[in-house]
Length: 500
Image 1 (cartoon, rainbow, N blue to C red):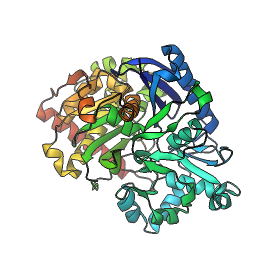
Image 2: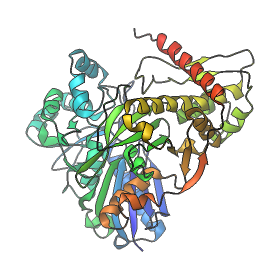
Image 3: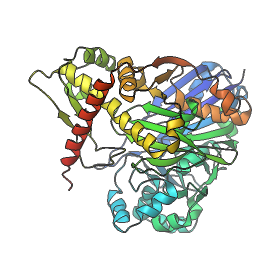
Image 4: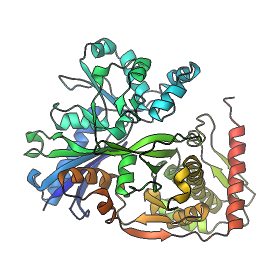
């Protein structure tokens, strides 16, 4: 039997999953690694920890499945996006810990780029806003703050990469320095219209071209693993950033299809086909995938707080012990109360992009208790998704003709209460698939497509299986009343902006 192995390298752990040719899971392994917080707002990873945990989970998954290298047709890699590593091109030694996507150390630099009027040009070329979230300013910080780094980079001694690129380099013994178009599109250095690294952006951020990896299709033969890693070479044939991989795993290949992944935060992507759509609602324009040299684009919206709202109920307030308790508790809430939680614990994401505001509760009474707070926390995720949904449909003219169905995955998708309320507020069906490991499945599919294990996208989409469809059951009057209340709550929160 041939397997396809997916490496799913995330923010807090590394995983490896072996998929059979019928996309069922044969074995998996997962390993957490340390997080480093050297200063307020700074988040770092040790690159060697990422590499060691990745290699260990690959070997563990193979052992569980009883698989040798000869049994694995291909490897696909999906990764935490925007996290940056810079390393020596000869020794492979990183010059500094990886700077993680959550890191905010370049906020002042980003403010200066905006003040100097560069954001319109950057957005036009990259589809992104100027924010510390993205990779480019992190690379610039490393070159300017690690002693000797800029001079070494100018001499061609250093390499830059997102985590997929770094893992590919390690897996191939330093023979291949490459990435895919989805990861390149998150760097602030890549022109999503030409499909090339952009000289104007490189000059603006002070990043030498010699540091950059080659950009390839998401499904391609990137190289082969070193013999000693797994006892024989294995072809690496697929790479995509985690949210794009989840879009592929959800088989969102048709323009108009939307997926939303609920983890700590939430990321929604709308496939817009061959056309990059410029958002008027502060959504991101990004590359969903690139196959056969052809780019497919997406609109993306990110919510900072989704599952972490439930963690707040558990760890911050202590009103639940397990996340699974939240739905039943919310069911007990007083229907006469209208309590709104705007969970801006770390600011507001799309479509507001206000990092300064902080969370608030609206509509509390003397009788507001744990049930009402649970109800408000779960609903807050649905309301925020509605905001993204509405922004996407406003931005894209093809939305009216598209199938109004949302495909969901991630930890919160297991909550029937939340998914039903989501369908009610969107007034659209919400589909939860049988296979919840959609991010890893997307990486496996890209590799398996290149290896000939999996069919072309249209036929692969036929393998997508529905676990449950949540249909809207809320009256129009109730929906409109609740959405109006949410709108007032957000307006009130934004008016409290202490940064103004």
